[in-house]
Amino acid sequence: MIYRADYIFPIDKEPIRNGYVEVDNEGTILSCGSAESLDTNSRSSAEYLKGILIPGFANSHCHVELSHMKGLFRQGTGMDGFIQQINALRLTVSKEKRVAALREQMEQMYSAGVSVLADISNCDESFECKVSSPIYSRTYLEVFGTEPEDAPQILAGAIELQKKAKQMGLDAAPTPHSPYTMSPLLNRLSAAEGLKSGYISYHNQESNQEEDMIRYGTGELAEDYKARGCSMPPVTGESALKYFLDNLQKEVKAPIEGRVLLVHNTVTDQESIDEALKVLKSPYWVVCPLSNIFIHRMLPPLDLLRANNLTICVGTDSLSSNLQLSMVEEIRCIQGHFPHIPLKEILKWCCLNGACAVGAEKRFGSFTPGKRPGIVLIDNINLEKMELTKESRSGRII
Image (tube, rainbow, N blue to C red; front, side, top):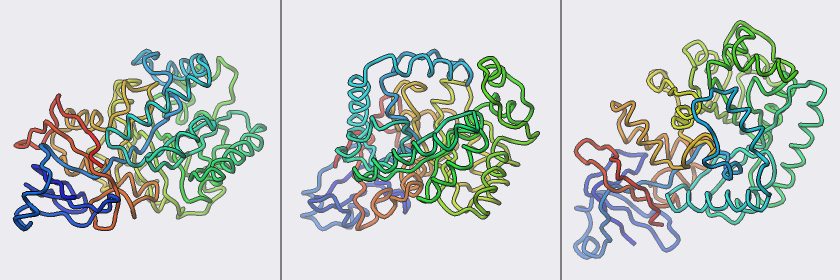
């Protein structure tokens, strides 16, 4: 089958005007290029689709098991207010309804073009859905725990969850949540355990409250923890990311192997980036702009990340901190606030970089012959400016 479009974005090559992509019956990419290079019969039999064709998206950060929380959260509360809402609302509906909600969102993501998912799980409620879904998922079994004496038991529970996931055929491993929700011991032990699989995901520098808590032991987040009688992480006088890297090196010697997803990076700075590049061999910098606006009314410093030539990925986060799990809406947000960033660059973040982050680049992420990434149409594009419009939508072709 041959599909034509106004533009093809192979991702690993420059966009092709009046392009085509050819696949076999199983969806394997056979070729792509200019439609003018096709013979007359092939060109006339090709299916023309108005818009741009891209490989399936890689959603590089999601909490699909929180899908039942859609529409329940107040916006602009900061991290302390967000945590209070999570604690109050997480288990307010039955397991049956929670599973039904996440299944619905998985189906919607697939229809809208998501082929790869880096998903955070705190339990096994999403496992059966992931097994049956055509989306490839890597599951990060996230742990919390502010009291150091609880660390061994918490980590043991995550390892048991990992065993269950692997028995079901899922790629999964423990991962730490963030510097402020964990004792230093659990933080480094869970990261070291996850790195045995080669992959971890870590909520990094999501808010100024996080930075204030780690640097100075002050701010709303710190006050919330004190009020609840939770043990505080050490006050370091340095960035939250440097704290994590220093703490991790007590267990794992640098340079640290493995693909490390640093998620959010809303208030990261040059000093933090420099430290990460010293310690981590393969960091991936995941941004979730709509989630950051939802909680903090802030955006990640994309120009700083780009200036350092970092590998950027894009995620949607969860329906507790977003109105929808839509990669197109994330792209539209990025273009709206950073109009100088070319669409082809953003699409690389959303496709190939995300596939690489979870080790799925041999099958997904680009229209390279031999891959089976899926084909996605984004319509209603402003082709002169190469921008999404308010009417742009994504839909899976194969």
